[in-house]
Image: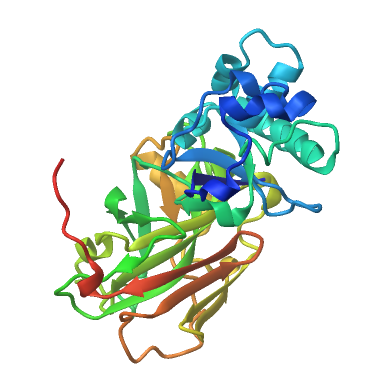
Length: 351
């Protein structure tokens, strides 16, 4: 399953759906279950899933609201409350309630897919519970991670990996831009596999480690060219320097995270073409090592580092305004983000 975090885009008056209470009456039998739903404010980030196949493949479904409609059709007494309990709209709450929330999500996307293909079921598109991709804006699949753990090769001469923490504020979504600081040393980037923790875990063995993962995303790390032993890892934590997305792909679709091809391009030029079997530290060892030091929590993000031997081009310039950083990982997805120079950065005002 491909889970996403999304917010609805504003729609013009001429393209309003049937999702408001005043419009429900005109929907007839297709309105079943919608009359209980409260409106969702534009800009609110919610958990969704992508319809995987069929005529409506790629449509984004609001899982919590779709489940409420499903429960209403089953004569549940308080469908919205029950949906909130089984399948929260908040991504972090969803991860905290695994595996029950994932079971509910699978049942709900099945219900939504059938409703979209049918002729007499609830009109999920009209009610803006299912939305074409162009009508939503995707955010990072993980919100407010407690820990964002990264890996670099340290000294290139020895290729000894180093683990360090990145600021959670470095996280960016698939439709965000990378904003370059006004005064910065030249910046490079690489693509990597990101694992999202799905349960609280400590002192895991390598055999247990993969069971703690909820799913995988494509990650991009922006960093200074200097990555040796004396490099300042604080520079890896710049705002927007850790794009993540486009979706959280659950582990049932990726049983082996070390069997994936990875490719990274800079404005069309291939710079990285590797394979996750060449990761600096394999995922079971990496998670086991981390869990021996710290408690891993739902929503924590672990970045794998760049596969060894994956560089196929020599980058002789820093990333700059107007570049497109494009990373694709087999079965996980493609993440392409635009780079904006210092002039694009807006001042941050306190509330």
